[in-house]
Length: 323
Length: 280
View 1 (cartoon, rainbow over the protein chains, first blue to last red):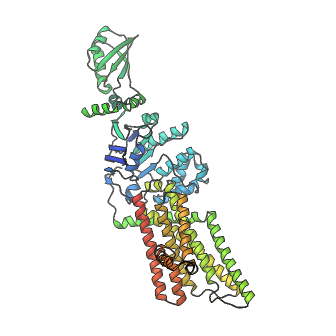
View 2 (view 1 turned 90 degrees about the vertical axis):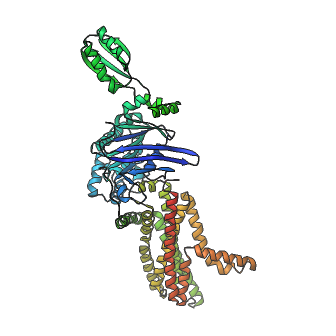
View 3 (view 1 turned 180 degrees about the vertical axis):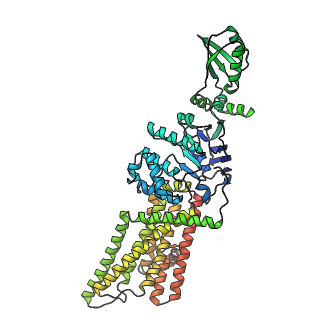
């Protein structure tokens, strides 16, 4: 899936933010669709949080505009804000309230129907039910993170904006949060999250935008990112037997860069996996080869990310613009 | 999902705003009873008032005369000032804490705007005052019963005027919380301003005699300015009006006090909108 399956929920048009002379975000354009998970990936200080806060209207952009559900967000856009759920990196909770009071307060703010039922459901789902009467100030970091997530989900929002949602969670809780995000996507929600944790992005995101020094360097699905990073894809083909005609046919294909033979296995280095797979299989079968299995081994997100954000970013961006 | 949001009408927007004001107000009203400071301020005001009554009774006993026309009036004013000062200070600290600790930002992720936030917090705290007032009234009645001293004249008018004062002080506290960038500076500035606003007019007759004429004139001009910005001004003037029986002036001061509160809250909303809700 490349661009979700629904309407545009978030549209940022040329968002720029300067703090004095310091450029935090520059000319950010992005779209998030219903039923899509979009990840903003970037190192610390890349401008991810500033970008998210501009989308939420918390930070006023120096220039550019934001459309949420096709409308410009204003301070008093109450109906619009009720369709958004937000988890911030730092939860900023009311520590002198109990967990239940905290959630009941937000349920009232969002006019949640059957609030007791909803609160109970989420507390049970995220294993916080035993802490309902505890003061928020007494919760561990991970529990606070979960509480923030419940607050964001309580009113069943159509758009979820999550800033580093798994930060500070243990492995089990991370998996739980990932499953929850995927479940919300399946329900047609638009999800925009920022992270510097590559595994989260790789496992969750349909599309990824790499933000570096305030600029969105590249955007696309995993395939497109690897391509943008110039990373070649390897295709591993298991054959009944490797015939010399098969290797010759493959070497004639323009998309094939290198062919290595190992027992009855071919390791083919190619540029565009999506287009080249059919060409490779066609070349093999037409040369008399019998394919037993075929799989691609693409570059990891980490490799793509490091390539894209390295010192040669300017050249890369210029190259992408020329395409 | 993903569909356009229908434009909100003025009426539906205000309906929603009232709902949020009531939710925030209810929360702050209930939370204020959980703090040690609330009971501390209440106790302090009653102790000072009791001390004032006891001193007065000792004076009467020594001299065998009732020398003050309205003996329970000073204790009533003391408890009013301490209560109003506490609520003003609490308003300033509570709003500053929300902004500086980032909980305000979280509220603004949802359906909260500057008007609903400032009004919700202010009215929540203002809602505490009738309960405090009820306690004081019972205390004054009880003090009158056991000391056989007469109740203050025009008690309902004084209590009504004191409500206006509380709203003024809360509005002023809200404004300070938005203008300053730390909880400590907000608290200290509130204490300093409220203290000066009380000390200067109370001490005016004494210290004006001690300064030389040209300085006295300049100080009088400064005093006039302080009267304009002090949230306690309309209480003093209203009390003076009650004392001389000028009820037109009383009504004017009560009304002016409301305008002052509205202006302070409006300015707090404007400043917060300009400054933004992001934690500094």
